[in-house]
Image (cartoon, rainbow, N blue to C red; front, side):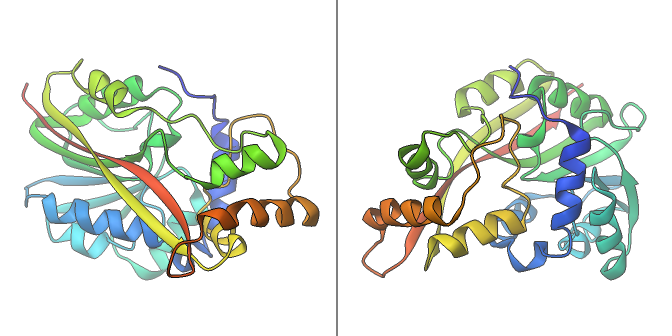
Length: 256
């Protein structure tokens, strides 16, 4: 199943611009990364961190394998990672890994899969580089995420401002096409913000405001005010605005 097509050159530039602000806005990424890491088993060989970004969790991952390799499509992300972390770094598209067959003992990927143009092909590529008994732990954004912001955007101007995400069922079906033991479970995560502006600032700060769809109308002061008004109906008892994510947690072990 194909997503809306991503121009990977634009994706790389987009995340490069977010590289230096990323650490101020990546609460969701950190939360999910910590959960993934608790499930990883120590292994011999190479641990490949796909879509590593600034690689905050490189030290924790390095303790689980002989060699850590951080991979990202955005060169500036890797530059930021190198400034604070040690490891080997690889500039590449996660859908075309410049690695030999069965060369990776563990593949870790946190909230990067949703940027694939063809998730089924991505999984085949990841399966290709995994060694026998190699483990895969990954997370991805699934359909139903960014509620109620997306619904409120649609109410304001009818524009679709998010990418098309897979459902859990579709992702599970794609996992089952390959020779590994694989599963996908859904974790619902709700972030809370004092304002729409703070919410949008976080999304922009992690590069999540990029869309493969036709450019939505400019969010000027008037539309922002309309969006804030519509979002008010969702403010909770603690005075915060929710942003709910459906996160797919993928676990697999190559059998042959």
